[in-house]
Image (cartoon, rainbow, N blue to C red; front, top):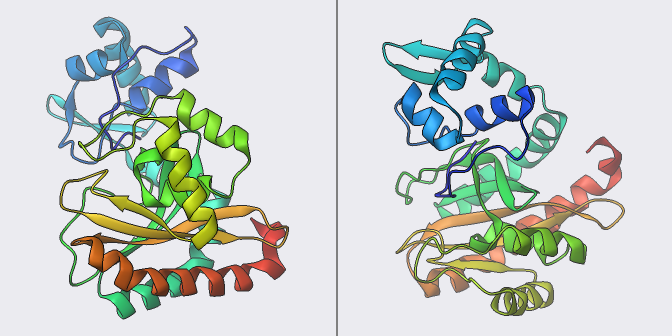
Length: 259
């Protein structure tokens, strides 16, 4: 589901599946329910079509209604818990995230790359972190995040092509919006094992991330510490994130096939 300010657009084909996906993709973490008219606008669909499909999705438990507003349904949450990568990888990484949170007292995150977005699989809030509008299952543009850069730095070149092809939109004045600038940061991330978000997703917030690998050497995901307050915090907490990622990779290597 959307948690970033991506442009609203109509589905690229006219199938029922594409229309349903467009409707489900309109919800963001900050929404307190959406009127049907707003769903139609965001999804790029006719209001009559949207109203009909919302009714069918509500009957199936994928959506629920509260007066004039529509919410995601519990059935979607239940289905999401069955996704293998979420269950297996999240279970393996969870102890490391808690240790990282305890060591830094800041929020620790786990994410994978899906297309041009990262998808958060887990996050452990830290006592020194302010509430953030991201949650497990939420998405964010990969090029603007330390997590996305950490993964892209060690992924095949075509993965970077996909991210750049989707457009390097600016979330703040600090977001990297050219491939040349992004490639420079990816080169540095390959050299150091660390990637950074320097106020690129939210003003005043810094993040440091490191990749985790499986037995075959392929990058699986990344972990990070976020809501850091300034460049000096990146330097201070970077080694802890890197060490956690290295130890986690060693733990996952024997069971790479499970992911």
